[in-house]
Image 1 (cartoon, rainbow, N blue to C red):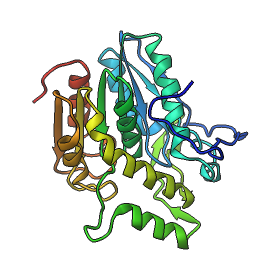
Image 2 (cartoon, rainbow, N blue to C red; image 1 turned 30 degrees about the vertical axis):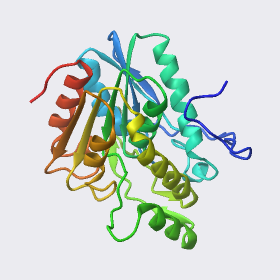
Image 3 (cartoon, rainbow, N blue to C red; image 1 turned 120 degrees about the vertical axis):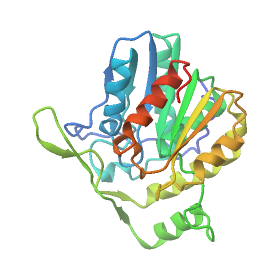
Length: 270
């Protein structure tokens, strides 16, 4: 059956992965509320990136599902050969699974996960949509992000990251993101971003957009652009003054969580 918003070339088929999921990277479901939401992490990340938010949602009475995108949670090399359509198809399966159990299911995406969430909402009915530092605008005003990503990918095989760490249940530190990714993944990210920019007007679901002014990864203009282009009658934009890219673990974490929880419950938050 054709999934709305999903197009594939014949060769774009996900490769089987045989590695075990790294401890701490596993997907999870927290809470037992009547409402539910699907949390979509960023590139090279994992559900652990969203766990603090998931715990806050669960306490507030919202069931939170932290999903693990294909190619993640095992080894950086497993991203090689992955295309955005693989992630999109995975989100569709997860969202439909939640929708079969809950009447009200929202979609919350961070970074490239927000781009995926936006694209999904452009072609499917979503009860509520939350976009956190969605990457839409170039970081350099002179050159499009897509061009910069493609040029980088032409000269380098991998992109090194900054593996931030959390503490697991046993008190041991672990990195919740890959320390590198294959540059081939940049091409499919670039393709997705370009598509999303042109499809934002198809979004009619209630949407909350949270954007950091100091976001050096997604670009601070991305949130306002999304707010301007979506067709939702209920849309909200929150600009953060002191946070960087990882807003769910930064100095304004409490504000971010409060805004998301209030929005998902249909409340007005100051």
